[in-house]
Length: 343
Image 1 (cartoon, rainbow, N blue to C red):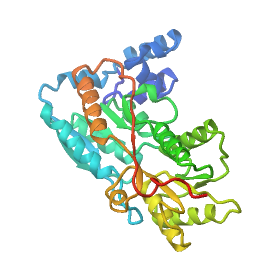
Image 2: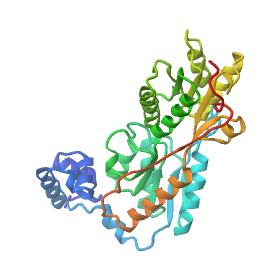
Image 3: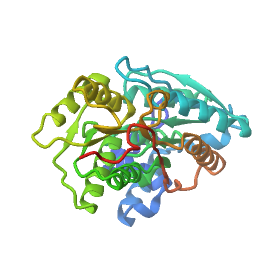
Image 4: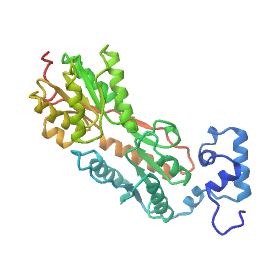
């Protein structure tokens, strides 16, 4: 035993075995991923320190809360809306058949979210949590794995997404649909305005555009990046439309950016849908109201898949994580891209 009043933690085992906390977690949950020599060293440290994995404590909790934790995010003042609220509603609906409910909490940063989720779980206030808005190198999955907190994420990191359960939308497929639609309308100068590179979703959507353009033997020089605000989208559109050979169509990483493109088009006396085709992503109510074509995410299907994975985790806490599930989006064609290219 450790000889101290505080219980032995996963970090203590990692320090004794001189390995990372992630390696200890893998030994406990995915031993097949660890070299036999390293696994024996970790198992010896566990035995020496008397570490009790939280999955044992989880089994001792006879009365579950039937509550799923979810960090609620503030609405951006520069955005026209995201799928956050739609997903939260869909998650609550998906949880209802199994008798689960959603508990919302706030946190200022990733480490604070992981700490709050761990506190709620250890106190028995939640059975598991759902992560949202995953970025490329998001630390939250690793932090929750280290704390043995059951979770499923909407989205996945760019590296090592096989160590945890996730559900995501095939962003690249959605962008491919948009490019193929525009090509069928006769467009050849197709621009793209995406998110900064630190966002996993932004990386995948940009990659989808580059791949689709190359498959159609089209140039990839009309590529811009912008924050997810109307103003930033308009500024990026102004840059693309000021080039010597400007685009006849622009695909945006979000509907918010697409609205910015729409504003800039009108400022230049370009008629959206006639002089400039525009396609957004997320199919928000704003896209519907403005007749903007957009790539819709199957939010309700994502929520149901996440709940199914959570129930699998809760019913078999010692089982390895289920491989991620990738769902296809769908392009909704409206006035902003429905007409053939005029040039």
